[in-house]
Length: 149
Image (cartoon, rainbow, N blue to C red):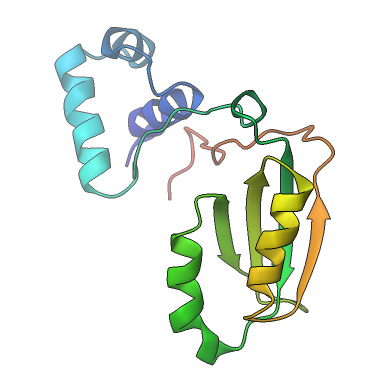
């Protein structure tokens, strides 16, 4: 990966809908050359997908929460499929510390969140934080064009 690839990644993280022509102008290459580089970055696993960022509140999801959960390793084979089926689960991470899982969820109401937490507690202990605001929105990783990794 060279500095041009890094700049392409940075531009795509900024806006995955940038036209090839725009990106080509920013990296001083032709559109076909940029297209080939993007295809290679996808094939090599640097780009794993594209998605629209949707405002959950506009869709009626007024409650975002983070749920810390203690989960015994033997529970994982049943727990992971359960979470996969829950459309309100936005993200699930295995973490270090007092809890083994950190789950991000979005619900229309605290009552729905409470019902979901009750279902989770069949698998382990939970502790929940409800989000009031998000001053730093989710964003991509920092990509330094001079980095030689």
